[in-house]
Length: 143
Image 1 (cartoon, rainbow, N blue to C red):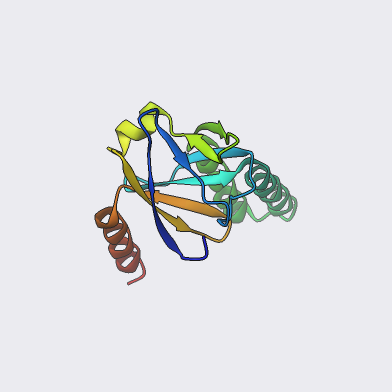
Image 2 (image 1 turned 120 degrees about the vertical axis):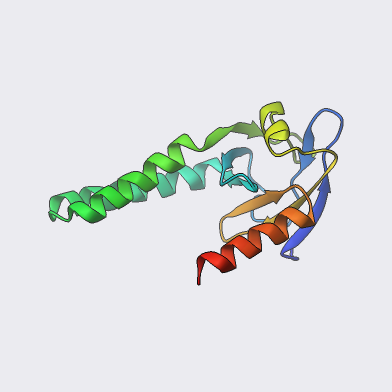
């Protein structure tokens, strides 16, 4: 997925293809996680678990150094990441993953979604309107 943004279809069984040239193109186990009410994300399970482990090490160092504020911040981040998981989907031989019915319903997904490559994950939007809404909220949060 050399382009940052790509439209993909969801088939009648709720499966979506992960582009082979995307950040997750070679991943077998894909973690589906809630970001907010506008988007959810797809992560390589091994990479995601490695990130959690790095955060746990940083949290331990913050605790050992007596930095309670940093400890609580990292702990909250870990908790958010752990509780935002919708589930894991294994990619099939055509590089498709199943989007759980609950996720399709929650984000009102029909037959097309918009994928945006992130640094180490893919964000999934229900069309260009939701993507623009997300960008607007992101810009407003930086003001």
